[in-house]
Image (tube, one colour):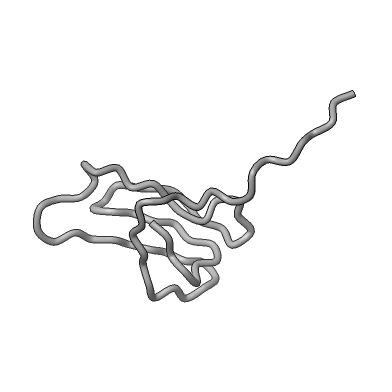
Length: 74
């Protein structure tokens, strides 16, 4: 689940807390397990502390941000 325009958001699907999104990243999407959805109508609640998102995008691919950079150890 991707929420364009979300800056600092908390997200629920049918009263199941999925997590938080922050515009600083690194992740850009939240995983929604299939059992979270019910037959018929579903409720998605987004509480954004800063932004004003108005779109929710369900996609089969996750956007987890750039790959981890090489960290030099001493």
